[in-house]
Image (tube, rainbow, N blue to C red; front, side, top):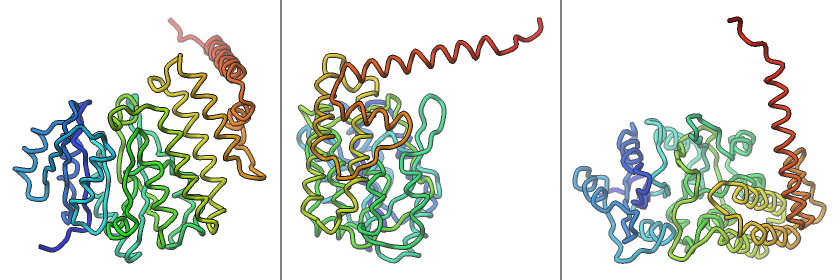
Length: 344
């Protein structure tokens, strides 16, 4: 049997009851040369029966059952080991694809020839609205050429997702890439894949939509926490330190790390009130430890956050945040007072 072009590795976690939507969007693809590997471990959020039902009904869907609760990372590793396709795509249950997504990916690969990584765009649906993905700027300015990481250091400033890129399966195997345990397990893996890629291509169109209802990261391995994020970026910088030819990557990776820390720190439901001082201090320590020489902070409010984090004072950071919220509330009230009331 010939190998499909794309192997979709999809852990069958279904806590928010979105797995069916994801599967239906895959099965609705106009491009049919793909397989789906549903990985069902023993986690309570996994829908093994749903995985088996789809595998029984669709020849290009298979269910892989694991005999323990291992978490997202190891589930992905098991699915990648089972895959037969030329390229790997790692999805989660809260992703949906437009019907022509795989067509667009196949057409781009026909243009580029074999690549190690193909990055593409995504959108987010939250609060009833669609938002552009965090890699929009990097993808929009990358151009059409197929280049290596030393020529595309700005791509390391994009969010390190596992689901907005195709990975060459043979290269993945040659590099012995594997997701580690813990939350945010994709961070060092996708960054190593980029660092060691020989040919990187970009498709600047949205091929996946994230519909994460609570905007939280999917379940990690047993015993994981949001503090795992620090260890994952430590792994990334260790990888970069071992590749001196990629020094131009450092400022982009640093900015991405700090943006990621600030995002998790501010996102409701991630870091508890009691954990906030410790999380902030860990982030500040990494700011000092990994700060590149001659680094230029971003402009505007984001740059102010970088500066406050560099200062290492959690109380000062919180005061500045409260001051900003207060100014916003005053501005909003003033705007409402200036708005003419409709005639009654």
